Length: 341
Image (cartoon, rainbow, N blue to C red; front, side, top):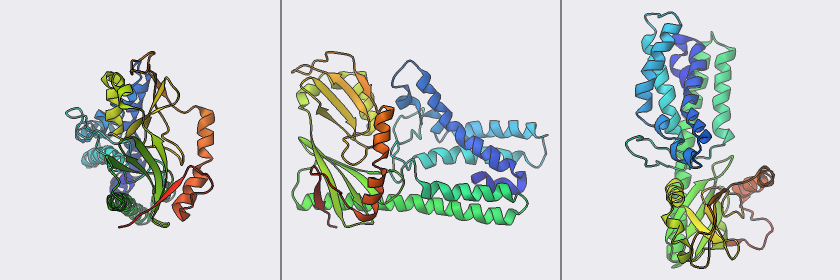
């Protein structure tokens, strides 16, 4: 879409094609998952290739190569270079608006910048952009039409991202104010987007001995529908906290994690940022410990297998229902907290 809006007049449909390819290139860092290090993807995906320094360095090289490939047209070198820079740098800037976060200053800093405005899957964001690109591909000679289409959808994309940011901030304020007025002693609060839409937010409230995981929608009544989960005793985490695995996990989750005992010896540490209604989290670390917290077996990454994913997808209808109506549905584990400004 960036290529179509800014460079189709100079470069034709090639701007759309190569803009798309360049916009995809930063995500080639997912190939680190082929590494023998089980945490390579967490450590290096959205790392150097998603840095603000990557586009200004790599963009001119790619632009020059494309310029040579297409015959070194004297008046197009600058357009090719600017196209590559624009396509490469908008990728990490967009990723910052998701819960996953992006290492914008890599390799000089590994801080993950996170705004938590939008889910990684949201058709209301993506479909208009696809539509504008199709206009440019189907009507390559009607530059005014494709420019208007891409311009409007790019404007929409920016507005949509900041709508998500506004919903995030309002939700966080309401939850904080409500808990303060009810004198509930909170250690930390996080708000995250959920799949397919903006209004519904996943809220994790960390107390001393519990974590409340809930959902609230800006479209429905100001109510937080939540479940309580009991934290594992801190002494059981003493040795786990000294491991490389846990150090990486804490950094990756941005502090939104908690540990729960699954049985007398099994400790599960959840990434609380992602999950469907009723979930502690979609994935985490599993470890066997004794009564003093000594680790009895190697740590495992506990993710969702295919069968569980299919069952989780069945809850997407519940996600949309919560977003539109705030209806908690049936299920006794849920409690409600009325939110106030």
